[in-house]
Amino acid sequence: MRITVLTGGIGGARFLAGVRAYAREKKAEVTAVVNVGDDVRMHGLRICPDLDSVMYTLGGAHDPERGWGRVGESWAVKEELAAYGAEPTWFGLGDKDIGTHLVRTQMLAAGYPLSQVTAALCERWQPGVTLLPATDDRLETHVVVDVDGERKAIHFQEWWVRYRGDLPTHRFVFVGADAAKPAPGVTEAIEGADVVLLAPSNPVVSIAPILAVPGVREALSEGPAPVIGVSPIIGGSPVRGMADKCLATLGVEVSAAGVGALYGEDLLDGWLVDTADEKADVPGVTTRAVPLWMTDENATAKMVAEAIILADKR
Ligand code: GDP
Ligand code: CA
Image (cartoon, rainbow, N blue to C red; front, side, top):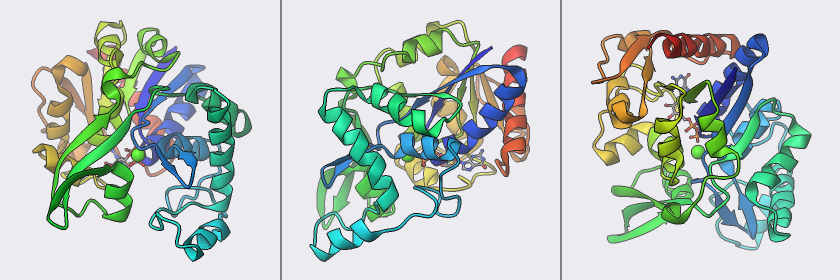
């Protein structure tokens, strides 16, 4: 069996740990297509927050308390940069993490595409699933906001980390998406899958940028595999993170039904919701209610098993 997962960073990484556990038992192959909209260049380094969250988490090297970055991290470089007054000071780069960014930036400068760089980094971390960036091309999520009475577009990281999404926010723009191509292997992973899962990642800034790459939506709807979404919203709450702020910007209700309808029947063959959202109704889509709290790998693997049951049933 071949399972392909569309995913963002932290929530997606936790989900993928459950997919990997499920796949080990079923001898299935897993490919993760990872959001690159959060990617950013800082201090001359190319940073890929979602790819790294997935890689570190599946490699057992993430900091479970902070949620992002490496466990046992130190911050000497960050302090040195701050002492020089080097902007941006609001973005936390750990010393160990910087090692990853140096290797990545150097390989990109030597001409390797991001997909090959990711494969090279994964040789160290052995995540147990194939990690593919959604695209090798530049695709960045920008946010149109009002800052100090002025309307402008800022990078998603600045909106998220510096302002905590706490600005009058008008819309999200996936800069570069129109001209982007799916990274090598992405279309094949979707069209050749037995099932495609949408991780319970942020629908607006993790999953939507992947869907914005021309060809991805077509592969999902034309490929033979059923597409099963897993709700990131439980009982009207985003569990962790700021999906509620992102959905509000789009005018989408913060609910399992709201996100299901946002994806819609064109994309979804099935929609897995939490038992708290049993009554969630998405027109044209079969829903199934099971516990969706990713408390540990076992609980998450059970969610995945339920998603596969839904795929078989529809
Ligand atoms: P990010 O890129 O690091 O922000 O992470 P993702 O976009 O992959 O995932 C973030 C989303 O995961 C959050 O918006 C939550 O809605 C969702 N999430 C986090 N924990 C859980 C959980 O235990 N269950 C479910 N169903 N969703 C969760
Ligand atoms: Ca992210």
